[in-house]
Length: 174
Image (cartoon, rainbow, N blue to C red; front, side):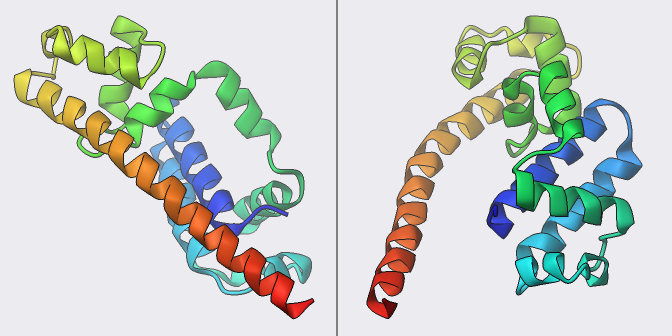
């Protein structure tokens, strides 16, 4: 079964996809549900007992998605959306100071392959030429990408520490 933090991250990814498709209501619902899932104690017990709807912002539809994510690791709607939108759009949309509208505009106008390509476009001054984006936006996007690189390495270490602590606790229990 997937960990609650992973399920919450997938719900946030779905929220971005829904916003990309113009369904802001559903995007908001999935974002709100992701916070409840992340904060829930005993999530897998709630799933097993069919009590996910007791969590704030989790209705029947989202409860089914969460349960399937926990058990299968994915859902059909997520796979369909991933086929429609490349990962760079999601990565851009989740950066601070970017969001979905700017991510969509950057992707549809310049079709970057990844965040490094976006960073290169920022350095070349291409982002500032897009409607609604200027030099300051371009600088903020580049800074957010640079910050993500640094935070990503730090996040991996934190995850590794959590996993080793959990493993050590498990080994001691046996």
